[in-house]
Length: 187
Image (cartoon, rainbow, N blue to C red; front, top):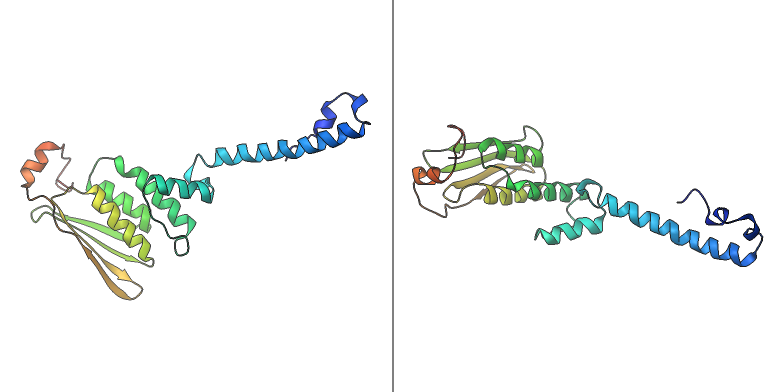
């Protein structure tokens, strides 16, 4: 809301004219709406302060099919930030950071078996949507020739999601195309 009325910005001679009072009162309402729209525009520039409509638009842009009836706004914001973060270098450490961001610190552990071309995630999570987002993250981040497996406890039951390697190349050929950091990295 504007602190100062438009009428008081006019010369004193207009303050007693009924039409001017009515016009400036009507314009004050429009100016307040404009201020609110500008403030919301600035808030929508950031995922964590964005409105529901802005979150929905970002989900459409990222091709995310959300279900607002079962997914909280906080989770939807985290998922958007997670999707924006997929462009970093692919290492086990980076994948662990992304999953810590989703699950919470220490609630999931990534293990890479270089000899068998496999990656596994062990986690204990209360929310099935987080498991689905973890699967999506892993599918996007890991090399196509790695077999991946997500294992964890979900509401006192056991959940396992597995993927098959898409490319049957040797690890040496794959590593020749990318810079490898160390023995714990994905390649």
